[in-house]
Image (cartoon, rainbow, N blue to C red; front, side, top):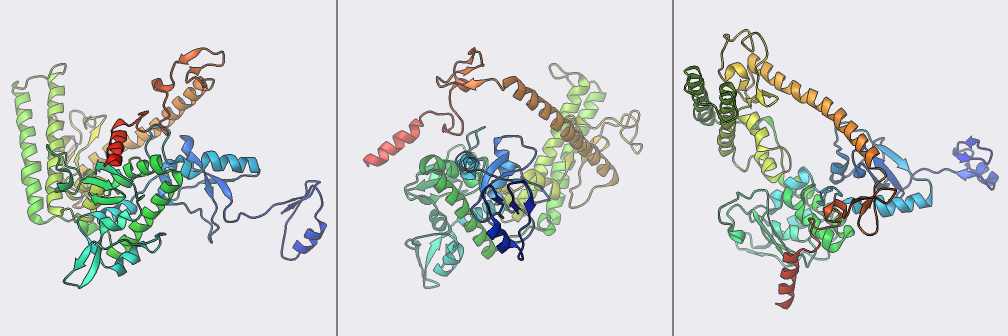
Amino acid sequence: YVRRSDGRKVKVTESNFETLADELDLGWKVERHLKNGDIVLFNRQPSLHRLSIMAHYVKVMPGRTFRLNPAVCPPYNADYDGDEMNMHVLQTEEARAEAKILMAVQRNIISPRFGRPIIGNIHDYITGLFLLTRGEKRFTKEKVLNIVYKIALDALGAPAGFDETRQTHYWTGKQIFSLILPPSMNLEFQSKTCQKCAECKKENCPYDAYVKIADGQLVCGVIDEVAVGSFKGVVIERIFRQYGEVATKVFIQDAARLAINYIKQAGFSFGISDEDIPLEGKEEIRIEAIHEAEKKVEALIRAYNGGELEALPGRTLEETLELLVMQELGSARDDSGMIAERYLGIENPGVLMAKSGARGSMLNLTQMAACVGQQSVRGERIKRGYQGRTLPSYKPGDRSADAHGFVRASFKDGLSPTEYFFHAVGGREALVDTAVRTSQSGYFQRRLINALQDLEVKNDGTVRETKGTVVQFKYGDDGIDPSNGELAKVVDIDKVIKEAIETET
């Protein structure tokens, strides 16, 4: 459109654009379409925190949908199941400058709430990097180039060795990941696969869970959610603190490209058959986990009925019984999960995703493959229903596991009608809770904003009201902004000592 000085709008078309160009006069405004490189604000509601609205650079593409890098989804709490977002096009140079300096995505990688990366790799990115760096995978030069071709690299580096069988040089998965690390980076930490052994064997860890990066090379360990994931991302945080926001942005993007290129080559899928457990596994779950737990529950009920059960401190006999029964049935589900995990194995795609932190948990897998477990309402077994019983198919006064919401079947095998009903009862609580909690938390937030809107952090670090009354002598009791302070430490002494020793040697 062209906006004339009198406020009238004239649409620019193929037939009239030359005439309008000749008629342009002082005070007219020419409105143009967005083009590559324009800075805009992106927002997803509900806007629960500052990072719900950030500045992005436009890349014009065909189609009528917004496209967003998956790594930027966590701050917006966005996913790709029909979410709607708002885009605001900035109109003045001052607004564009403020957005670029204060609101750009790369400036908000570290969360102002907890001081960890809120922007990081998710889902397939984590799976790809986990598979790439797990064990000692070997790649020929051709395969390496196919994995790294979308990343700006100066050189591949020297091969790890020579494969006598194939008569060719090879590179390892850890070497390929090292290509995107800053050359002087040093870092040591435990990955998500760490088993919390009594004695840590560090570089000799049998689970490859001890991650060591020395001079920009991944020496040992596997890359998973703890290393590059959103909300955790130890590697991302170190790069941000040590090398700046631009290097971090490049690393996150390169890690994503590396993961996707590898996973496309290696192949990775998860289907309904991946939850299958052999018959002997199902029998083991039925006998050793579920049947044993039910026998213990029956023994507890007999002890209660016979007056032999002792009440726990501060609880009635009935409360004690319910608590002990819940514990036994909870253990049954956990034991079922351990048996299922043993039969599925670490190579199972579901187990891989859960162990690496890419998606889901072992509890999800347990419920799909082994046993759904006890359903609860407000932390207790299901009690309400008919007088003296939950459903008419049970005898009055029946306290057994089945009669109060224990689901022994798995989702894969299918629930019986009564199990399905109990599961629906448990699910209803979650729905109600979500609706109630959302309205309550929103109301609390609004009241807090109104109550605290006059508070300000002054130059001396104190928090004061408009009259100058001191509310806090030090902001947050430590005067540290989580997005700037490394784990709320002014100085990381361990890091300083390590760097000093390395410099001397």
